[in-house]
Image (cartoon, rainbow, N blue to C red; front, side, top):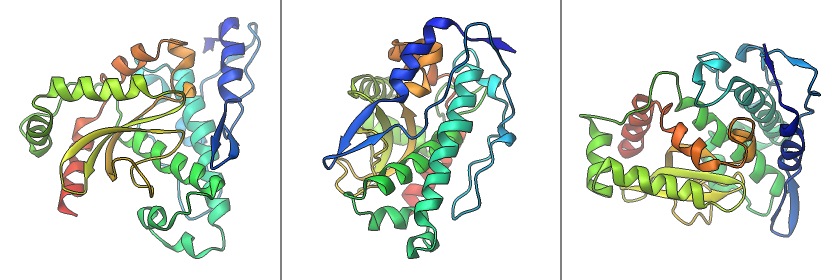
Length: 259
């Protein structure tokens, strides 16, 4: 059981109501989470309690408790991020795909056919995919760096060293203006690159600056870190490296280069 400090409230409401433009059409953050008063107690639930409505895509089953990433990512942030934001993206995507031909396709095929002017589908398709990758590639008691495998060799080849990669990735996340993501991708030549995208865009979408298959992504929307770090995005980015599941990222790298 945990308590929420009163001074978190206005800032998170601002973050939840953030507006951004896409093809001259305004979108809003997909879920607004009412916060308790300073006197209210907040009970942290269990990831299995977050259940999406039936549809083409299911939520990733989080294999650890919300509090297991602390102190790097706090339990309340995890619960709100997973059971509110991610759940809403999943339900919205399934609603948009319902009774359409796209619902029968693998998600990467949907990206290939995506009309970038379709703001609702663009936002929720990206929101679902991006968050699923995020949950898949973080875990308790991980961090460090890949060693003695194909991904480690590729990082050394394409960045010179793991330290160089880490600096490039952190810079991409820190410098992303407003809400968005930073990515490690396998590009169309099979090389590793770091890039960033605004809002819920990703490198699988048409018109991506660096097209490729994402194998690691960090969410730099404020909902991913504000309760724990407030405006100190850089501290959240540093802490993210303590929870990266490099075994899973390596699996994704191997799969990407095979294709």
